[in-house]
Image (cartoon, rainbow, N blue to C red; front, side, top):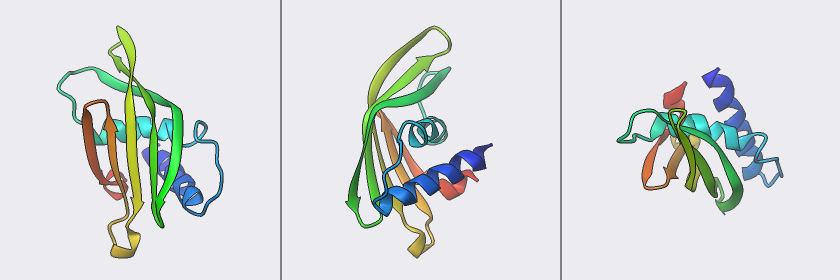
Length: 118
């Protein structure tokens, strides 16, 4: 399942890099839930992520897309709230580093190569 989510994310990211338009909510938003879970360490237990709203993608460099929006964050089944969301995704495959991501949700952040998640 993880590889399916990541494969689709990488495919959609490459479409954006080529200048193609895609539905960010249908493809990218839900992938960020999984990516945030993998790369962001939070102090609290029972925190999970539930999609990004108001998601925008901006082409920053030749192989780089910046994403901004608001991500739903939940604590167990008790409550949900929105936090600022930011991700910078860069294709570094030319230097054999794969697809690299820096992701921030509220005050928490993480980064790494998506290749490490396969």
